[in-house]
Image (cartoon, rainbow, N blue to C red):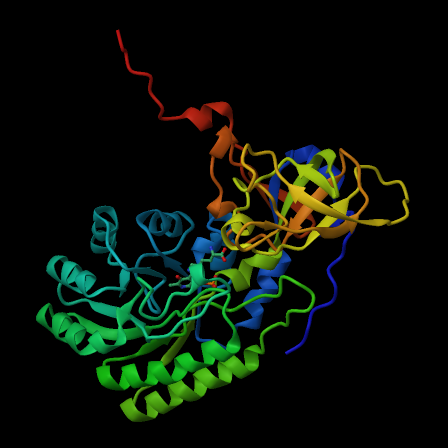
Length: 425
Ligand code: LLP
């Protein structure tokens, strides 16, 4: 485990490309993803038999295509995510399952899709077992178990324990096996995901719970999934995860199961944040600077409609300034509050959980300079909205020295598409 170097406070380029040039070409606000970072994070996890990307973190087709080319498989939590995976070139069936549908319910559309395409299902509720069994008896399934404990970077991202709606309560496993039997479904996999942005201490406890559940299911088990949840450092004093130690724990666990069952056990990991968070930058332009008594505000052109993590969880994102013009300046620091353009007072990027506004030490900047919200690749664009009739922004993939537009910024026509004014006479 090691802490990271301090994050830069001034930047002039992203992946070697000039920030003012990128802003000119694509406009602001816009999301940029550095493909090299995604590829490095994938490489970190190669020890696991299967890396299954939790696409909810960043589901642009181009990102799915990038990770697919690296042999990374994919998780889908909705009909839309299944369709994205198919559109990005994943096949529905194969070994290991290219796409796994993981959820606590089937809406009608998702059930139709998994039945029609033969997509593997990770059932997060006893009801799902019955609903799938009635439509597609005889299939292999995975069960997502809530081991009775969980942990996340926020109470809102804790997915285990009795207050969580996720997974099958561990004490109901026997009942679920009976349900599966009734429909001729074979439980070939077990999955546990205790929360997002958790820590190694909590993640490590999952192995023991998994082993106990696997023993209860028995020899039909061929795959265990450690879920996602790997944290990444958002501040310089947070440390990177000791992945080797984490892998060792799971490897030993699966070896014990393999010895017990007399066949190999495949080990999956299902990261979202870990693969993409660091790759992503939300590039904004400072549009106004003003003072409220002792508080100096940088107001940028992106708000919580573009990056909701600070207002939702009080999440901290590193920030940096890129000067609009390349004139050498002395870096003077000042304490500022960073906010967006929305007509809502919670539209502040420098806030703690509970909505408490805080100050951030940033370089002195002027209107027209750029401000980057960093480590925003995971749960950034995907959680954005059209609040205040703001268009969804462009996404750009930076790959081998080139900037590729991977999503166009919405136009006004996009914004009102589907809206109808009825003839009221
Ligand atoms: N697998 C399952 C079943 C999940 O529910 C999730 C995340 C993951 C994998 C990926 O977790 P990760 O490796 O990214 O921690 N919007 C929140 C995070 C919500 C995560 C929901 N489920 C945030 O911005 O922090």
